[in-house]
Image (cartoon, rainbow, N blue to C red; front, side, top):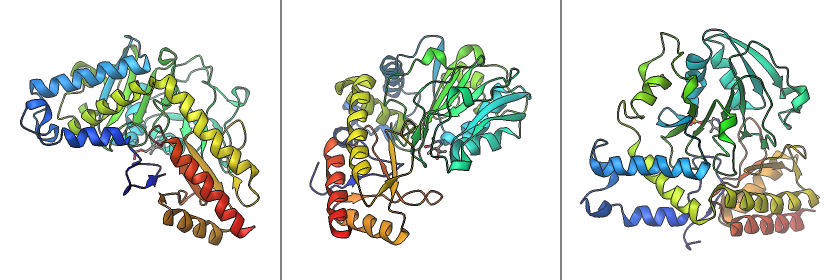
Length: 360
Ligand SMILES: *Cc1c(COP(=O)(O)O)cnc(C)c1O
């Protein structure tokens, strides 16, 4: 790590690979002889068209997206998809929602405006500290789709299996996309805001089975219609050009690290190191239950908010920043996305142990 940079454990926008930032800096003023920055280019120019096409191809190849599925580069964040999904896929009828945290709860609430939402499970009663088993899911036979959030960024839980359903799966992968291989053919739709594990905020990637498009409610804004966006190859209007370019740099970096297969090994190693340390701790305890724990967001606490605050300050003084948990969850949260180097996790483990020696 460069000396004046910190280990940034922010949940999002979050750490970017340092090599990516270096490359963006090198190409900032004059992108490949164009005499301008990617920020300044027309989205219809040949040079940007090449970036766009190339990014899409790289994404398809890295996540092994089959030809049956289209890749869209959209705006509006993950939150816009809370509405776009029911508008496009629910046909005013019903859909199943697995509520395992704040974002899936928000998505279910938004979907209620467009049809009838059936709650397939809700883990609120135990503070969203676990993922339900397949047997616990209450599936309705007439659902247009089954919706879930693969990784619960705030509570630090992650689905360790893909649910078995008779209807298309719709999944929010905002905080764990590209961290492991996914059998995309099993999903009707996958989406992710870029700012956790892919690129700067402003880009949302949607991967959709083309067979599902074209059934949107008549009131659906053009910009939110998957069919319109597929027909226009995401270029109905100006796309988030800079974010798409940054994604292409991240994809190059990811490929060098062994792709999503390499990322999965790294994510397991990072998470194991941190969970093992916290399991052994006599001061800190983990929020999420074994078997449900996220490899991306590790939530822990002492049980004393004053002590938590002291730890957060102690870590920040050592260059480990943004460890404060989300306000609705409290405690600490260490987000250890793809770009977090193992040294960052080692530094956190050392800090946890040092703090513990002082306080136990
Ligand atoms: C951050 C996050 C969101 C919200 O993303 P926005 O881009 O801010 O709308 C939704 N779902 C998950 C899982 C997230 O981590």
